[in-house]
Length: 163
Ligand code: PNS
Image 1: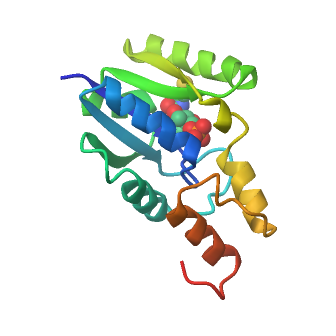
Image 2: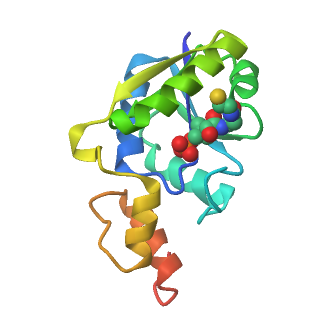
Image 3: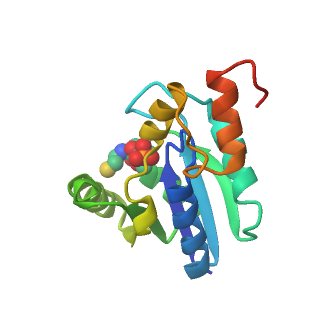
């Protein structure tokens, strides 16, 4: 029974992430979507619990997917989970250098391979950081994130609305 690990910050989960998770779930028996507790890149907008809740809501239709979190090295967590592969989405050449470097480092540290899935073209411009920025200034992100996420973003940036 092959298990794949989809790691990330998911701050918040976007339609691009969801597409990668759904496609991973078709190829592996089990998928663990693992949210990093403290993203290195920035102060997170949503707490770890909120990021996990949103992921659980939007992947509820996928019976072989479960949501978890990790701290520390990804490969230590991957080994703990008995993961056979790490799966990442690749949006563009700009993602490639860093993702390749991480894949090679993770392979060297653990022997676990990283599989890349090409992002669906309609999502290649999409990132959580841009979604946060657009939402912060009142832009419409409803076609870029699941409805539950759009509602939480609206509530975060316009406390008059419930989320
Ligand atoms: O969604 P992100 O922010 O692009 O995800 C990046 C993430 C969390 C997958 C990456 O930063 C990671 O694996 N961090 C865990 C720490 C680690 O193992 N670092 C060594 C990587 S070679």
